[in-house]
Image (cartoon, rainbow, N blue to C red; front, side, top):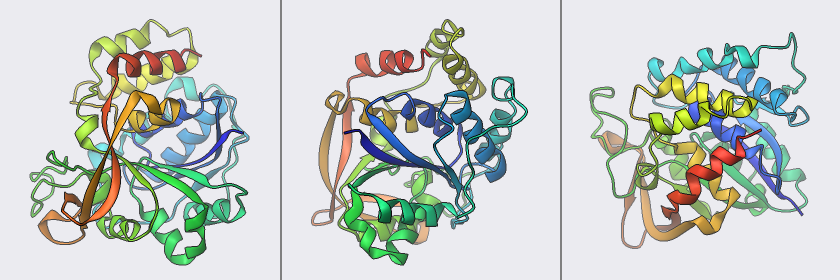
Length: 306
């Protein structure tokens, strides 16, 4: 049986790349894609997601737009990338696309998918945890339908990426997906879900550099490699890492990763809001500790060679 996965992403460059990677996995059955209005502008992010699914021959997979809003908005400079990607020529070769956009909200779609699931579902969340927190509050029974949560978020033993010059009053300890809605993270931490974090501790070790983008360029004859290369070229002038792509690749080959157990708590308010703090006696989670980089980079190049 294929592993059933529900993806919840928030429309940044690496979220689209994670979507593209997940859709290449033959052992995975994607149940749908939720787009959360966090690191994006929601309309172009939803549009680009549907176009990507069309391009990959996955137009049977429904897309749902979350209407949830967080506490701390991502900078506009980050969010505008969703407009650029939605206008990439490779995604606009058709007048219409057939991937359905559901009428129900993304957060209610999450509840319905889990309620209707015949077997436990893996949640892959590459953005904030707000939809999941909402779902757990509105329909507590769905917790038993979740096999595990794989989340790209948090920073355990490294600094966060919410820079103090962007967010006055922040102490720099939080990661953006947690900072957008720290109360939601705290709610999820109250659950009994198995949580596997792909935190900044590990993603800091998988940079996206010009050499890798050039390797993608040599695969331009493949539509997905071409699209991935264009996405990465958009952000290559800045320090960029394979955040969401790394989290997604765990589903491709878990033995390439080593997990480590940590006891943690979430700081939900104040200058450290969004911090994932290691504390003795805290909530136990698993974190991706190391990855075989000799496997990782060739793997995504191979998966996108289509």
